[in-house]
Image (cartoon, rainbow, N blue to C red):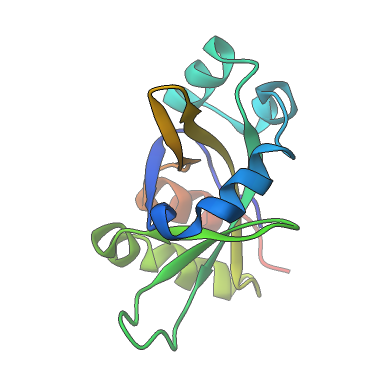
Length: 146
């Protein structure tokens, strides 16, 4: 389910997935595809950098992760795992996954974009366009079940 995308959240662990991110860079699109899904700070960035490297990210709560029961992995469709939310962010977004489960969903979706991959900063990183957990839960609570 696509969730509210008004803020920005950094992804961690990308240094271990540079090959995947390089493949992803060749499959990204400009921001115009995502403008209707964006608001706030995320929309402002999309409007300023229309030729950015955008893609749709899937967020999955890895309940059985041996290192962190709150772990949230970040995936790029058709490419693979690109990273994780930080431990602190993963803990904060647990209420979002509880609200999603009440709607019968296990996965959240949001626009995202690549940073880096340029001269002077050759490594890639990922930024998610994701509102606060409170805003997302509020939206999901206001959405009829079923």
